[in-house]
Image (cartoon, rainbow, N blue to C red):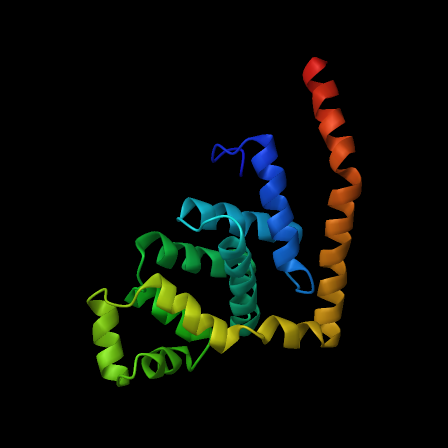
Length: 181
């Protein structure tokens, strides 16, 4: 995905390192993290700390909403890409995470009705969305990772990271051999 977006091999390695940092201790797999990174970068997220935060927030929100990471990433990417929270995305978030709209309204010091009007009029920025999401769902992955199911998922995620690190060179060499063949 990253190479398809025009990133060279060095950039892919750099971004993969940021993904690894972002998913450490979470239940997000390396494959999911790279997919979130690709979507986030395409939607305008900057590499580095901003990308790591974004990946972690998508994972936290996915756990909190009991949704697959790729579904939550799609919602986040739409908000990020447009630069604002829109009604459809708010409703999708609220469906899995009741109380999020109230948290957004509270953070803006407005009523629910006024908040909904602001969303309809495109007045709620994607950065405000991410800030509130961080305070609302930021610890959900950590809490889930402490449960039995979370520990199992975290173990699978770590195995994927280890496998990628061990096999990365082997796959690169294999790709060259296959291309030559």
